[in-house]
Image (cartoon, rainbow, N blue to C red; front, top):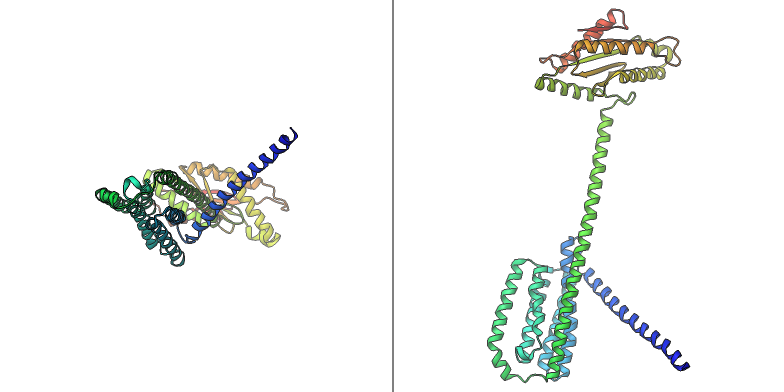
Length: 406
């Protein structure tokens, strides 16, 4: 009883160790194939090219390795000619793989491998005595059209399929003569090779398709990541462009639009009025006696007054209205779809608000003068600016701190 209890854990440990070794063997084999596939590609290859090159390399390596075992088995069973065919195939295939690794000539490598994979099953079947005695070795010929479809294109695959059908018909024609001329293997060997060809052949096809699908999925994921990166970069670029444009069109001191932006907006409103007949008005405002402010209190205080005036202007405007610093202490306001009378009332409100504004460090209020004009269809940009400037000049000449409409 004690012996049985001791023996059972030993058996369990042994089984676990064997299972781990088998898993490790398959894992190592997969890693080795992956390294071979990586060597077959170039850093500049596209995802599609990498998939084709790596999968074809794996197919070539798998079939070449299996060909060594198949050839050795045939030789051991007393079929030296049948054994020599897969052994010769393996040697030529490994040379082709090495040549490809050295030269990276994929077109030649693809053709040579497809030709070798295509000819091997037919030559081997003929050497074994035809269809009945070759243990369905023809299953390996399915690799050729399949590989051509994956590694070339439909046109190439169609050519290899035609060649496959032709050689199959040829084999059927000469099959009776082969069956008479060649002594077949014993029934047991034929059954064993039947199982091996079916099992290993379809397992190899599954392995290749699995690797191909995984490579495609990885390439797809990489493409999605690249697409996301590009979209993110484009969004960042657009945001940067918008920021740069905003900086280009904004006055640094006051935060309102600058002269460049003013010209664009005024031209836009003129074109809109000429197209749709929607009039608008323009106000030009200028701080009174601003030179004295700078001379008395300094330029820093002068800048504070300009900023305060810009804030007063913005506080009285609608969201559709537009204000820009025209230069120095002068500002221009564009009032879309606004008549002269409404513009005059707005200008007077701003004038009163500025006069009532208490500015820290100033013992008295700072006033401003305003010129107002309604824009007509025949007006040009220069004409509008000149007319509203004339209105402002009249306000200055009339005693300042007032609104004049022209």
